[in-house]
Image 1 (cartoon, rainbow, N blue to C red):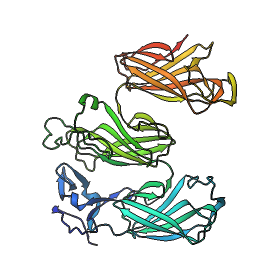
Image 2 (image 1 turned 90 degrees about the vertical axis):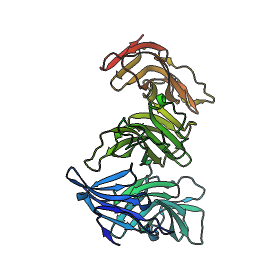
Image 3 (image 1 turned 90 degrees about the horizontal axis):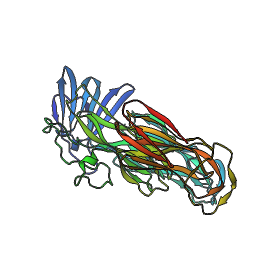
Length: 498
């Protein structure tokens, strides 16, 4: 394979075969090795070697509005291939039955009860990826394994299957190790039985895949508008182009005032365990590269947008962009999402509204309930009501503290605690916030399939967001009313008593 650094202005051309997509590879030297950037030849117009403020640069032009810029001193090489070779699999090894055998009718075995799906190690020189699939469920009487691969673009579907004619009424867990050949150092999406995960081999040579949600940057919108003077360089073409696949077309009938207050759009697909999260109206420099990172902590998923300057070149303009991120491997359970500071909750087991837009208006969100603050006031935890009926929460008789609060006017957020509420011991606690102009009503809620015949005392915390300076709010928290006005950028706190 011929590999050359490009100089001057080079127009790209390549004979496109019927079975392969030609690629251009840019190997960039980074702190921990080489990062490979891969382009399809069909979308690249030219590669330009230029000097900007005495800095030698290489610019990859995709069209007059899209380009990537690299510092020439950081480039290892630029080269071409006629496309990806066929990815083959070769079985490396497989373990015997791990642990105890289990009756085939039992549901006690889980393929991920140690939370590890796979481990991998990449041989960059030989383009071989060694992957160990952890705790695959199989028949106790199988005599071996085979692993077949099907590929489409950057997606690799691995199909592990047992060999042998015998079968018995018991199942077991196995580790299966496979080598994948002709693997390029780039990002791949893997599908293994019911699991989906992503590995970026341009950044990581080895690692462990855990059974937790995983996310990756999808794309950003074009500049949604720019100041006068730049319309010739960055014209607004499609208004608000949809950037997640199942979103309705957003090009027409847009309420511009409302749209300017949008913070996050989301669509969840519980069947596939996938979510499309869009951080709306993120303001970045017109010439930066955009991206997003995903971090998972327990049941909380953080999505943060960012921008990178590939060189010292910055445009004299900023622009709002919509940044799209895909989250995979979600389970039918409750999650908390914090997307560029905007927080919301979703219950993929119970919620029926799975697509929504969150706006920068006043809103509330249940945060937590305290543990039971005293011994059960009445009844027995072991006895259950067959059909519990939710009631308006009552406060503990004789308690003085009704509500406490603390607000940060600079961020427009606050925490409100409704104290000493008598609630069922076994119910699922929450709160509902209703906002009408400057009136904010917060009501504690209870739900659940079974309630105990006992009550206990709890504190319920709600977070309010999107509050404005120089505005007076009237709160009604479980029947307790009080007023708060933010007339300075100083913290506000207080306690409401009887």
